Picture (cartoon, rainbow, N blue to C red):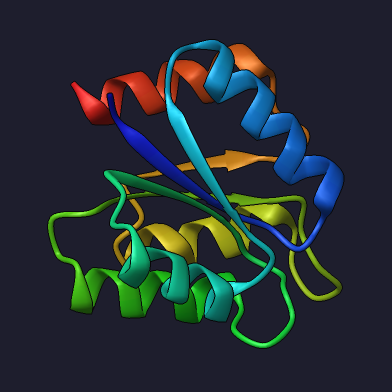
Length: 122
């Protein structure tokens, strides 16, 4: 069984992704920011990380860069609804440049999430 770590400061979004992923047979761990995500990854390594971009403490851009350095084989999906300076695509392009294997713009269809996760874990 593949393990997925969802890092998002929005509890509703974390729980939505958890329900969708567990319903498809994945084991899911949750974290509210990049610092919690790193602690979770160290405690129980996963096969794939889904991380939001805008979060307190350690944002998604820094999280992605550090994950790709410390866990080069780990698959990463970046998700974002945007921010105050750029449209979501700008941040997601940056995330991809830093090593995210895939990006999803919020709000996304749960089927798109599952399809992306499945493709990366094949």
